[in-house]
Length: 150
Image 1 (cartoon, one colour):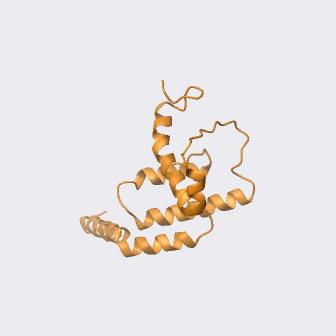
Image 2: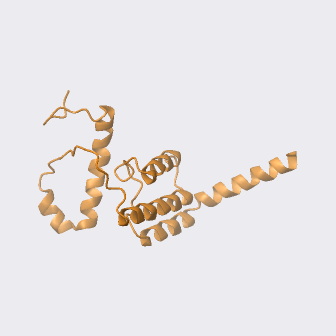
Image 3: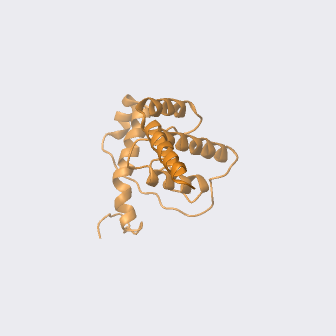
């Protein structure tokens, strides 16, 4: 590869990064994602927590693209959300491994959720999950029964 080819490759890479960072393109990708089947918020830690291929790819995409907004990130998560939806429709993704469920008591949540609606309620639960998950992961899920203290 000659110097001219390298310079052209560099210019092409810079143009692609500018295009990927364009807020209009990001909004368009987000709107498209909202219209796709499945969870339009796919990509948060809760939705990519599994060992399934979509979850593994989702975690990698989240890690690689966490530093900045990206149209390509939205398109990638859109493809994964459709993949996940199609897999679940075929009965995949519902394995037989044991798991534990962490319950939290959000005082007044039920009555608030009835007034706020599903979208806000699910958003709040995602935020709670994002707040709790790092603490659980830090302890490798090894919490004592009934208590989160060591």
